[in-house]
Amino acid sequence: MKLFKNIPNPREIRIKLGLNQQEFWSKVGVTQSGGSRYESGREMPRAVRELVRLVHIDGIDLTKVKRDDLTVAAMLKAQYPDLYKSLKKSAKQLDQ
Image 1 (tube, rainbow, N blue to C red):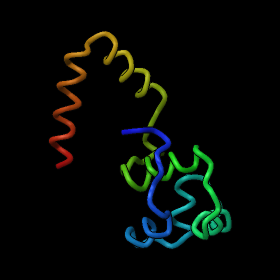
Image 2: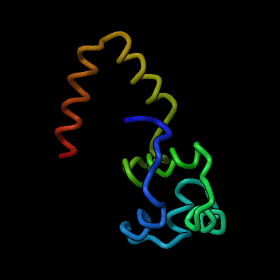
Image 3: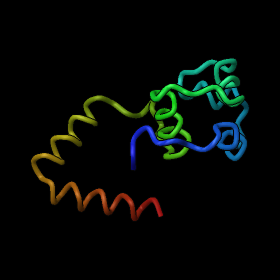
């Protein structure tokens, strides 16, 4: 996964998900009018583009992500890299 890569047209993503503009854009902290401008071709800032990818493409619920969880994951990866890789592989298999 490459951070800040180009994503498909956000309007296409929104329509595929069956969301209206308010529902889609509010999940990433953007107003409906701001989202409408992005859907009309205005360039999205990197941070917004990454949030759209995380929330609407990767399916991450940002309301459930806590700083402590990220710290624990980083510590696990640094201190027990083999266990981290094994857990990551198992998680990917669950998603399939």
